[in-house]
Length: 63
Image 1 (tube, rainbow, N blue to C red):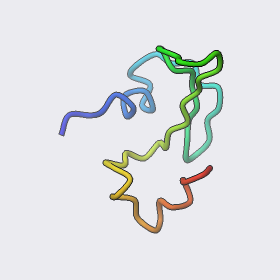
Image 2: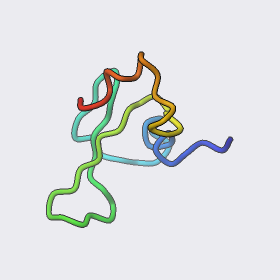
Image 3: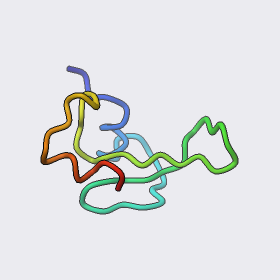
């Protein structure tokens, strides 16, 4: 599978200013905002879909 754009952002292959970063997630401004403040918070771990979330990954939900 070709790496997704979010994985490339997490791996710093695409220049992005992180507003927040810890061991599990990063937060950054959307490049095409639809609101005055539009921030994306994504897990550092690649998760294919919501249906593929394991019990271990549940701690990421609502973080």
